Length: 326
Ligand code: NAD
Ligand code: LMR
Image (tube, rainbow, N blue to C red; front, side):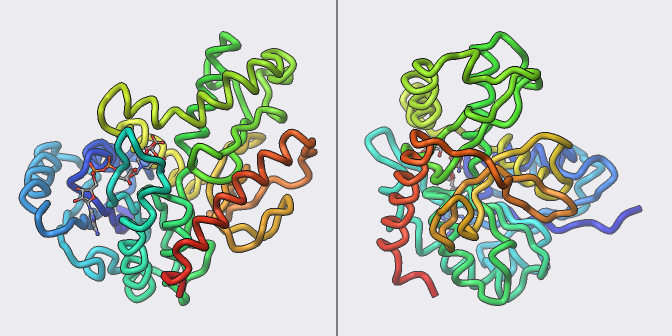
């Protein structure tokens, strides 16, 4: 029997966690042979609700779940964590942009970055989901100087999955027939969902769907999908977000499929002319837990302008919370 791995989840009584925790307990991240111990973090007022979630986890009688710990102390939650899903943060409402959450949520991530720095495994994989996810991830890693920027990633897999699904529907194929869409930049309305390098089977997607659909339907649909879900549900996306969180962490832990890439928000090394040190979403492959940016893609003027626009927003967000960058 393998040793259990320690998985920390923050915001564990919230709506994303209500999907995520049960996927984790079903072995969706690392498979049915890998036992897990869940470390669940919440704020004090949410502890009674979290007790209820714990009862439901127990009632799943999961063979994978070897323990559950609940706490309102980040240092307890992150102790020896191998994986950390940073979900806990306030979601936006219909009248807000994600960056309006910056001041509300930023403090959470400096505290949690410090705690991860002190007590988490040195190989911890930290996936930031709480919005604004890119800049929250930057705050967390800046407060964790003894960890590496490579320990941190922010979630743009939901946008990536949205893009895959839109292309599949337009082309009348299954999502498994679509590869190599890209989300560049911020998990926000300025993100650039790019299909210049995407293929359906061996055909270029752009040639199949046409530039007009790409620019005027596909890009705004993917950029605005979160807001559209909020308008429809009255709450932000939760099940699809949990699904994307499992997808992104799984790709990071177990690697990407041969010949395919995924999008992840990672610490920019300057690739494609993006300012180093921003958390920027790139096309990546993963081997043995190491994330590599897909290099050498031709970027035309249309794409270049859109990549710069989302970079500019990330610089503005960073400048707005500079005081929290240790
Ligand atoms: P929610 O309000 O249902 O749950 C958030 C939970 O976090 C609450 O239970 C709250 O008590 C808890 N929390 C607040 N502060 C905390 C702290 N300091 N430590 C631990 N827990 C804390 O929200 P949700 O729908 O689950 O969404 C969570 C976040 O994820 C939001 O910021 C939302 O915008 C974001 N989100 C991101 C993506 C993405 O693609 N990156 C997708 C969907 C949602
Ligand atoms: C999403 O993309 O669905 C989430 O980030 C929630 C939001 O605020 O849009």
